[in-house]
Length: 133
Image 1 (cartoon, rainbow, N blue to C red):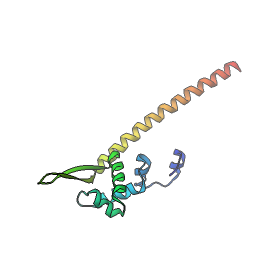
Image 2 (image 1 turned 60 degrees about the vertical axis):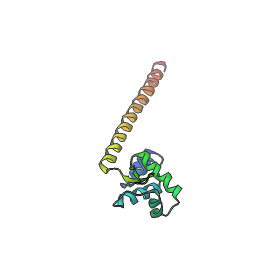
Image 3 (image 1 turned 135 degrees about the vertical axis):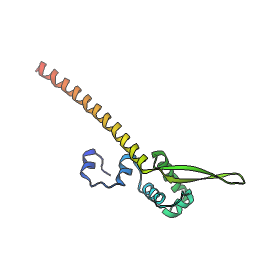
């Protein structure tokens, strides 16, 4: 992945690149997400692990990152005789897109503020140099 914004803007980005760029997700996270999107029903961690050919603990960590970033949702299924298990399903794509747009707007506002602070700081320094010079 590119280190600077300038490098990122020069790269050819694809839709899945948003997962990495905006949320810092890894390739396995993207693979797990694709598996869940391609499934007709919510999946358990064991089912996801099997489909991506990874250990359960590795799939679990990936699923936790997807949960934290809002790309998937967890649902509890209760057994009739007691106990429960969890299944995971993708979040509605329009909700994910809305969340990413909000995050981008927040980032844009913060960058604008930092750019203004930069201009104010160095414009003031330039003015001081001119007065003394």
